[in-house]
Length: 88
Length: 443
Image (cartoon, rainbow over all chains, first blue to last red; front, side, top):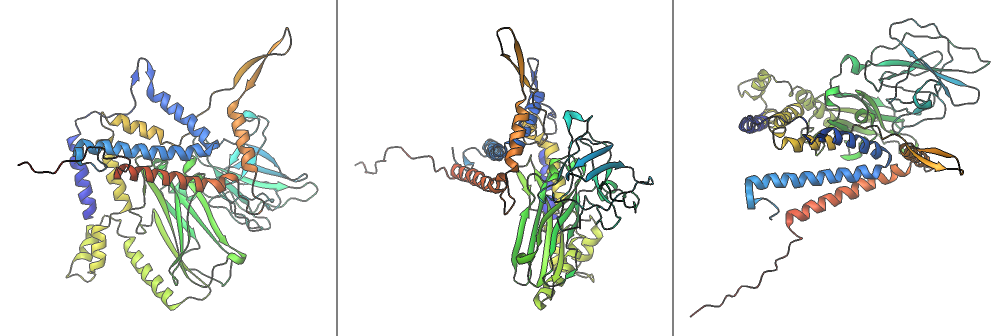
């Protein structure tokens, strides 16, 4: 309960700060080209091929995790600057 | 999974025809059939493919991936969640959901052999599967059932039935099972469902997953055992697999069964009784009942218990943690501008498959005056090649190349990712190349 309360309070506080920002539901369309539709279609075909050529799926999952780490690191650098773990 | 309507003809033996026919629960049946014993085609790794070979089907033939695993134990055939053993004139049926969505359909399978008298249909069509009437995401049951005692040396099958609500499709990544010998405090089986587990890769809400069975030399010794199955939840597009809140059995995401093989031990019985008492209390912790907290944490109350009170106050429940993370997602992660990144991550981490491009026609000149178009459907070529490769199996263990290599490759990729992240955190790739600093004093 206590841990949940702390987490919910933090999430509520952070959510309140950013509540004025608009919600993003799809990727933008630039120059008549629908990026969201293209990415969804492309990933669907890629997932289909991954069911056949399974090593690609494993490598792609690892790539996603790695990109997630780098994204998280960039986000932390916004708040902590040079004190971010991992240095420069 | 493709849609199947009407009556399908399946041919396995030269003179025996197998049928699968769509039925409606509640309607009276008037067909006769022989008692069904499934042929030698048993697949305990994820399902059975049946080629219905319908003349009017899409693409020439229909393949239906049955939402179950078949345990090949002689004449005991279990289909779906509510399959029955087939003996004499019983029924065997599977419940399937069309790929295009819609309600569950029920298909009865039976076979007839020319020259052999048919049997009698003995029961009405089956009742709704458990997940249709109650689609709450949960572990439905584990075998062996809780509190059972099996004879010494008996063959035991470990399997799990689970249910996933449509809103959780994509969040649930699989099921993890652990079997532990309590007497020796040894973990005997720790396994997770493979990537082909139909519970999460198909648009289904129900699955029966077979893990292992003890037969022959693999029979487990006498003693007290505990088997636990947990749904693995993922967050942020699969980057986080939730094992944090699955430390207690909440009766939904995690349940445990305790059973005894042959003769039990004193220590094992003590542990099982204590565990059962604890679980009875913990199972009720997920209820948002302030009265329960007050009763447990009130030092003047009759049910005051420090350990239980601290557990209830500090240990986050799985469902509440999921609610918190969902709140983070709705409140922060989908906001502009980083919402574009979240959207891209959701797309890239989705498991939905798409339709490959159509076949490519390449003009080929076959004579001086004649040019024909040769169609290359490379998607079909790849699928055919993959099916051929998957059909090559080790004759002793019945493992395909993927079954053998995929776990190794996953381990290698995971280790590589961990080392890259660790190296980046430690900054091991960076070198101090600056000049040495002078330390002399000026006078």
